[in-house]
Image (cartoon, rainbow, N blue to C red):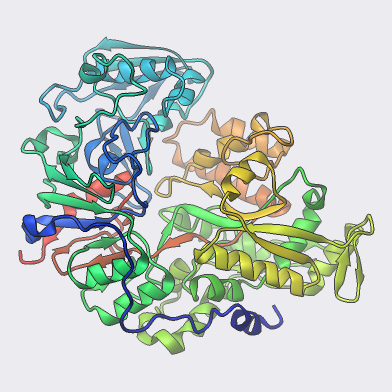
Length: 634
């Protein structure tokens, strides 16, 4: 971009850094921390606001309860977990099973072998009857959380014996087990001995809850701002025991906490893990508190989550149906300015449609560098190589004067933290692409083939880094001659699903993170799921991209075993190459989460140096963190 520093100043972003003290805001009533032994208590920030129905624990029905209260993080369990990072003992954990799913040759049947040493928190043994009841109840009860997933895929399910479940599927599906595989969330197993006695599961609050996890409910705020969980005496009869005893006796989840409250409470010793901060908040607390750190030991601190913020185009809008137009818009952007405006330079860029997190840098980003460097784009007037593998290095140099030794100097560390590269801004090549697509330019303004000014609206969130991202992207396009108006749209996800938008800044890619298989998002890209204009679009092909080659890749993935890593990576690379040619949306960067970890009372958190789990504590995989923590005094 020709003058991105001026644009940054114009939106008031450059001097927004926090300093010193912050003012408190009301964030809900504090839990009775003083009633618990602090050295035995882990206190986490739940990113949710006030829970509307705090006594609702029926996670299988949306009754106004919370999702990040500790309920599914500490108390629930299901068949498998897949960590977004390296995992403690490999990425996949056979949680309630003795091994991976077993399919027949054409993937129309799945058999699961269950463990015989797992017990519910009320003493009942976990058996195949619980799994069968979970599936059949939701198949037969529309309105339950996983009723659609089961009713559209399962023909029948039966308990062969107490520890064996057999599924017959409606169609071949080598990824059916993913319904029971936790990344953030999955189909949790219901206690058959409890719910079989309930007349109406849709109105049952499941209070107090009974679970398979290592913690039980201790107490909660009737006003919906905190939950306390206590370690089971028989924690060794849960699957978490595979990795050792959870260290904290008590775990508190605190929600409805504005950023400044999170900072104050961590500084006061009343918060051990902050789910997320603004970049400024993170920079402030690591500078002022010696015992607080982030995922990376220094800048950029944040954890790259397995989601990928991007510009999403509505392909059912004529403006975006030509790949040359989409590529032109990509080449009008300056990744350096985007990084500085959104994350103050702490972004992890990705030029390909796979988040640069977990195992993906080793599976895709690093191995495909030579391909990206040699990638050629025909603009109609010239052939260019648009990829710049050194943009991350340039951004590191830009922030080093401010953050000094906190910025890594090792080239590989920089690439993992700042990204492996992005596209050079090339306004001239963008113009060549638009001209080849029939556009004309009058002065600095671009006009479409129909003679109308090339203009559109870009939906952005109301606040946060993604709002900043959308704002700067819209300004870069406008400066390049495409009139783009950022629209603050609190309902952007709903409108995106309905196709009621032109372009949006969000994500259409979510991956396992710790596993190279891309079906978590890619299967829904198949053309069979594309909705008619005006109808709701299934997640996650929000752009409604349709391509025969894309269908072929997806259909082949459906026939490949999940454990065939080599073939899954090969098919993933085919998708990356197709995406590069078509640029159906513009991948920009990982959704970096500024997790703050206080080592005042606990140590052993997952970090970039020891990436055994996702550090974002509202993910269900966070339960494994508790087995690796140690009190600071030990």
